[in-house]
Length: 575
Image 1 (cartoon, helix red, strand yellow):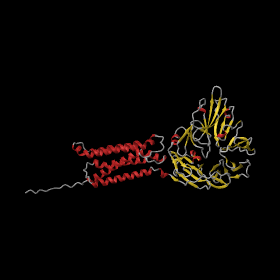
Image 2: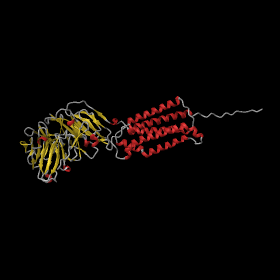
Image 3: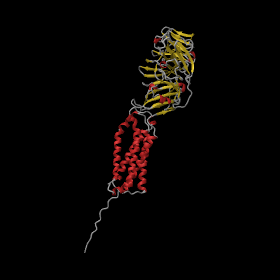
Image 4: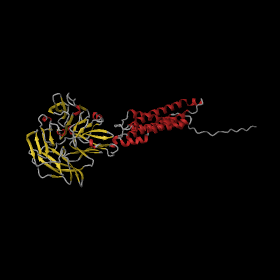
């Protein structure tokens, strides 16, 4: 009699369900990573400023493209394993799923090759946020994560149990993870998070006061602050941004600030702050970001990309006067010196950044290398040295600021054409000076383009301290004659105060307004009646400090004061 026993082996756990879930999850993450890589590479906004070194410049694009290529290779590897794994194992090729390790190794090498962590940290530290880099990083992380997840089901040589639940649910979770990663990357790349921008309602700007009046307010002026005229008052710029104030009250109206601005990161270049009052625009220049133009009244953004923004990246410079609180127009020049400039002048619309016109070609017989440009509100002056076989002369052209068309011309004899005059613009007046070149001509001061043909060429040097081009009223100062106020460049209509010798007064610390001439020096203000040049008494003391600038703004006369006890202040005067 045979007694047979049946021995049953223990049942092995079935991991096919887990393999299916992880394969579906990893594949979904890979698909999402590739899609986000495509968005980053071809649709997301790039850094508005190209970094100077190749590593930081190339990382966003290189990382996005790497996510696309490596992700697609990983997906093709998954498809090949699923379609041919059993056939290849039966043929003795072992487990083809091991190929995924090669893809993983490529991903690791590429991460090290691009120095992703360190280079990305440098970009985030030095530049404004932009979507292309964080979305590329997120895409790369998703692709690498997807490869890691599918490594288990592809290399364990397990069976799969494909059902609606084992595929749809993990795939949905994977896509939700991709959506969260995309949202987080877009949030990180949103530069608006770093900006505090408040706008204001549009109002009509009040006129500049007709006389000095009384002190109305004092506000603290940041150490690195710069004041320009703009909108219905004035604007103060600092490395963190700009704040616009109401001229009549001194209260803040609107601002655009980056509170976390850093010296080695994005910050406003205060010296490049430009106000164009005639076009109601103010332009800010940001290191590692570029130009941003605002409406000076409301604070609304006007443009960030424009002809001006592109052209300013070339060798040409922004034209602006020394100590100017408001520019006559938006322009670029080859070079500049104390308000005058060399050739290659280009005029732009401040509200759009659009190029309007460029300096006309130099006429035959004139030397384009010695052509000079001076910019004022009523005209752009072009001064040229010309010659022919019989003679030599200096040509002064007044060009229309809007079109560049010639509106006035004057030719002056110049026996030595090799000596180009010094050209500059002070207080909206043209100054042409031959004397420093020892040329036969001396000094020419033109208060307005309509006076170009009649303005006298004088031998004695005078300092222009104020000018009103609308009326042709010019105020000069010298040790010999004191202050002289001339109407329309007519000697018989001049007023002189020989006792007022303002030796330290320069064009940015005297101002001519409707009824008065104001000058500042020695921490006090002095005023003269414009009608007869009689000085008002007594002078107005400012405090224990130094001041050397007068700013005539809508609704207010501003005096920056470096007070010994209270620090830097901005004092407002109005009737």
